[in-house]
Image (tube, rainbow, N blue to C red; front, side):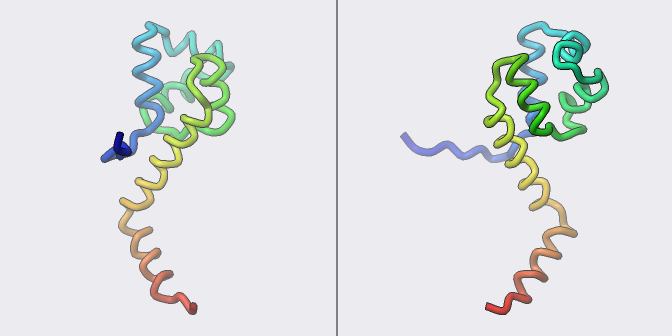
Length: 101
């Protein structure tokens, strides 16, 4: 079986939002269960805030989704976002041109 490569990285909030909706779990209830504010949870689920190591562990405890899997999804998303930023790519190009080795 060949290796599957995702064409676009997703924000982990997309996955988590689908999961909470499928479980019919309200955001307020989940936020309370996890001990975080509703706003923080809502921002994560709507892809406006990255998940942290601590929130990944809390999601694992609350939903049973692997914290390390969430971390990899967040990392892939961060890398894709950086690679899509024109300012960063120009800076990267300049660094590569200045290599002394």
